[in-house]
Image (cartoon, rainbow, N blue to C red; front, side, top):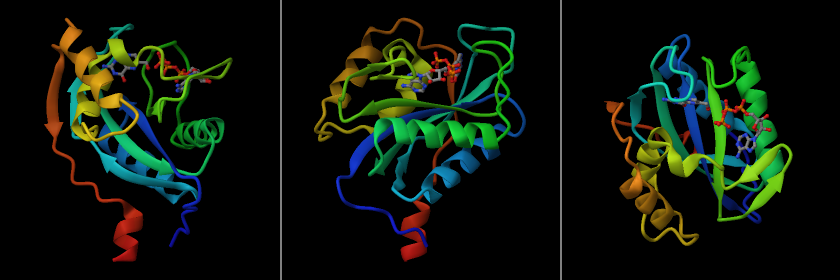
Length: 182
Ligand SMILES: Nc1ncnc2c1ncn2[C@@H]1O[C@H](COP(=O)(O)OP(=O)(O)OP(=O)(O)O)[C@@H](O)[C@H]1O
Ligand SMILES: Nc1nc2c(c(=O)[nH]1)N=C(CO)CN2
């Protein structure tokens, strides 16, 4: 049972992608490991989408999804946990934008703007990526206070390249911590 720090909780949105190995297992394992971190709770996850690779196209199809977290960690601390989990799941960086067992990107943290060498918020390419926006649209609601709903809605409307994305599996995630409390 994970005692989740509740003081000063922020809502953070992440994008997950995988195109090596058992892609769905890799993504679910990454979510479980995030949820186990003290100070991180996975609150909602999107459906799973199979998507054509963008940028470096000579690689396998991706599975992409998004998740909403509540966290008491700072943006940099959260990123460090995400990168630790990427490494644990065997991410090996050969080609930039190349194939990977799992890729975790921090997209948005209550609208905070950060521009540091190892972390830029909001993620600088999220608004041009249908493979990020489409899953995000499953878990961001008009009531979201930081304005992310309109950012996603507008970006999706203005995006030409929405093709290359198909629903692969509807999500049935409940936060593990909620399960362990029930
Ligand atoms: N918002 C962010 N989320 C994740 N990584 C970030 C972010 N902003 C900057 N970075 C930095 O980007 C570096 C490269 O990350 P990575 O190799 O995963 O890029 P990528 O996922 O392949 O490409 P992209 O960043 O376009 O999605 C990381 O070492 C990290 O320090
Ligand atoms: N479809 C798809 N294409 C990509 C992805 C991804 O997650 N999905 N990630 C990339 C680098 O972050 C580059 N290209």
